[in-house]
Amino acid sequence: MFNKILIANRGEIALRVIRACKEMGIGSVAVHSTADADAMHVRMADESVCIGPPSGTLSYLSIPNIISACEITGAEAIHPGYGFLSENANFVQIIQDHGLTFIGPTADHINMMGDKITAKETMKNLGVPCVPGSPGGVPTVEEAMKISTEMGFPVIVKATAGGGGRGMKVAKTADDLEEAFRTARSESKAAFGNDEVYIEKYLTLPRHIEIQVFGDGKGKAVHLGERDCSLQRRHQKVLEECPSPVIDAATRAKIGKVCSDAVASINYAGAGTIEFLFENDEFFFIEMNTRLQVEHPVTEAVYGVDLVREQIIVAAGEPMSFEQENLVANGHSIECRINAEKVPEFRPSPGKISQFHAPGGLGVRMDSHIYDGYSIPPYYDSLIAKLIVHAPDRDAAFARLHRALGELIVDGVETTTPLHRALLEEPDVLSGNYDIHWLENWLESTTSLD
Ligand code: ADP
Image (cartoon, rainbow, N blue to C red):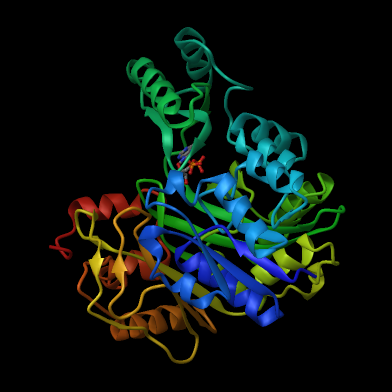
């Protein structure tokens, strides 16, 4: 096992990893920008190293600075968290070249899944159901038109290098296609330095359902059920739950096995998430994330596991402690992502927190790096807390979430808590009657956030 792990991240996820290290008796090293000198992850880690100025590019994304921090502190392994360098194959290669261990999959697997065309082709060959679409990249508008007409509109033009909802454009009819094609390409070129795009059938009323998988890198893999992340704004998840209200045990077992078999057969190591759109009782693969997800705590609650601990165990070359038959779902869990943003505009609201009170009690978990007097810097993601509840069933989980949101106090900055409180008043949310467009449609018509 490792003696010391460096966490190449900040915020709540850095805390999450430090907590696992402490419970495992492993030393932890925080890295931080000058803007984060007073951050909670710096205070909680055993050691810390300043790796640059506020700009993420010059600090949390600076590979040389992170490697130097490992050398200075003697850390043997790096946990990347999510975002930043977590899906950067070059980073993984450099870590290995320095005789260090990356806590996550291999550079090859990251490359395979990072390119969405290769990912789709791989998954299709492994028997995973995919969204119908172009067999590969589509280089010209003429070809895009031919494929879309054959498939039928609406279609979605997607960047093969895409991520974070960028480089994606919907063409409702043939008249929209040329513009969608050109915009997706130029957005992708600007964001990812690669203008290759492909085309998929646009599903009109799907849910977003993702399967948590975990592999030991030696041909063994398990699944830990699904998460329903259909409540989204601008392709960003807002509230997630496990299990999904629309997936029954037989469906879960079937799609779960397809996914765990797929990752087992490529010797995948560590945590991964296979994302699907789910429409008319059919699953359609859209992408695989080769890292820990923001919403992993709902799976941890329902399956009673520690995914970060398991990532560390597998990265250290020890046998995976999960066996499929021991992974039994228990109850229901919901996570709210709380951002420092003013609703209904979702305008970032950085600044000083004058008062913070975290909810507690049975079945309540609060993953957050904020504290009384903490100043939220304006440079990074606006996520300030994840409130996770766990209860015996879905209704009880919503009742618990309602109670916990009532206890939460964050003063001094605006947060998205009013959005979550308002969502819990909506019959569609409470009954699970929503698809990926529900939240945006609701935001357009609601007056409850004014
Ligand atoms: P990214 O990597 O940018 O997050 P994804 O491929 O995961 O992109 O898609 C993000 C979101 O975009 C999905 O959750 C869904 O809301 C929407 N989306 C993607 N592909 C389709 C499709 N074929 N039909 C309908 N919606 C889609």
